[in-house]
Image (cartoon, rainbow, N blue to C red; front, top):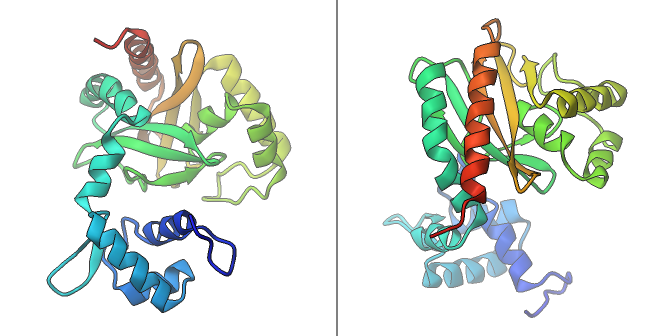
Length: 250
């Protein structure tokens, strides 16, 4: 695709436009998109018009823009995340029926934990995770599991970068984090008390496909709640999901 004067391709600029949308900013004007994407207003308006024409963006009656249903439709076709979610969801529902708090499914994506699914109870403890939301690998229980079993290059990249505190309990010392990751590999589970929010604990286990860790399954409980029972539920569910992923697709 043709490059802009800055050297960016059209595809890169389209991605910048789409990434201006999130859960807290689901509706925008073209001018707001231009500012948040760092694009000239004329460029943003032209890209927006093309994205509306293809259905990747929709325009409401007031002329404001939001992500189009066609974008969701395309994203679902043949996605590896879709199969993982389909296999995992029945087992997540069984975990959720027992813990009655939050049950989550996450994968490693561009150096962060990306959450594909979340089941919750109306009376569950506070939890900032959202579907399609991200959390730092070193802070969240799911992220810690994903990081512990990630390639060495990814681990070293995280360990050598600043480890920002999400809460007072977040592990921010590289040596302490390295030790925690080794413990997770030994035990196959992590309990992260207050690492993201002071009132809650995250418990996470790995999900494997053909022996390789591809996802993390977690629950979020009140910080002082017992964790052994939830960890056992997660282990059983992760084993069942792994079996389902390894089964042939009919």
